[in-house]
Amino acid sequence: MIMDFPVFKGAGYIMAHLPNIMMQHGTTITMEQIKNPDSSYLRIIDQYIRSYEQAVKYPPNQVYIGSLTPAELQELPRPWYDNLTDRGRAGKFGEIYPEDEFYAVLKISDSFQLVELEEGFSRRIKKIMAEKNIFTDKQLDILETASEASRIEELVESGKAGGLYLDRQLVGCIREAHDTDPNLSAGVIFENLVAKASGALAIINLLQKNDLDPEIVDYIIETSEEAI
Image 1 (cartoon, rainbow, N blue to C red):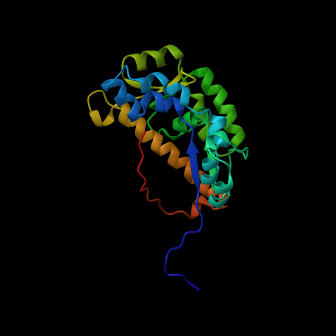
Image 2: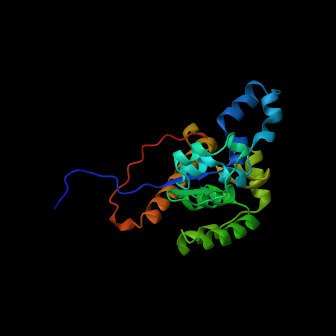
Image 3: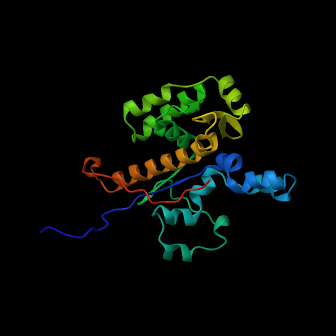
């Protein structure tokens, strides 16, 4: 029997915990720094940022990746941020990724060599990503191309790149694609690559969680809205 209408056969979600990207490039924070640099919001925000471990154990996030049902969530005591649940980073529908792994995916997703990672960080994260077994050896080899810390610092300080930080330490950057075109500024490229990398992870999870062969996919329509 040939079906003449489309159906949903699977779904895949990912969540990325990116506190440093939020602090350095998030719209709310960067606008506040411009408009009200001495605000109490900026002074205390560090106190309210969840760690990766807390984000993984936060019950609503576990619902998102399929390790809890909405009904089970309602049975848990509130406030949920004080009643965490230890069910792991991977669920039936997807996975919650830490910031260092996401930086590696940014580098792998970059087709124009605009993402630069510091040498020591790049070596360390390549080993971690190899153990996850979600990228080919050819893709992982992209992480072999790394930069000296001094070069990354110079690019960020000059305004030609947006910094990638880990625990407030500079471990990489995303460079502008053109020195005069505002549409190819470091900020625009940064946001586009974040969208591309997170989309790539979602597709990987979709294929793996549903045991789908990527060769059967003729084309992909991307209709999401992203913002930092």
